Image (tube, rainbow, N blue to C red; front, side, top):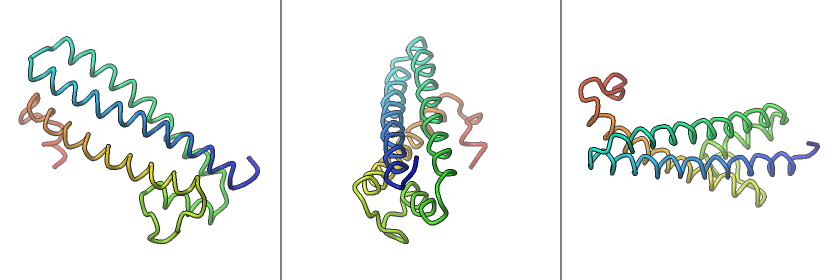
Length: 138
């Protein structure tokens, strides 16, 4: 990859992919909540497996983004990290279509992740009670 636009295009592809995986993780987590409310343990187990696969794919996308970031020059790398972290316009204003989409999708991904974590906390507490993962980390 020779120029900034190529790097941004490759990152955008992976950010979009990661967003799709995160939305699917959220949907599967909601489905797990429904299955738990029906006491359908078989569905919960299947959904947990499916969610784990989505998490693995999201992790792969994030790793690919990190690899691209490491190949970028200092200032461009700082800008991209800023947009990926949802710091839109605070220090670096997105200056192209790709950078604006990266910033937008990164922000939306963080919102999806936040909702999913909140739902997962509720589910985990219902299932594990005092042994909940979230109880140990609070």
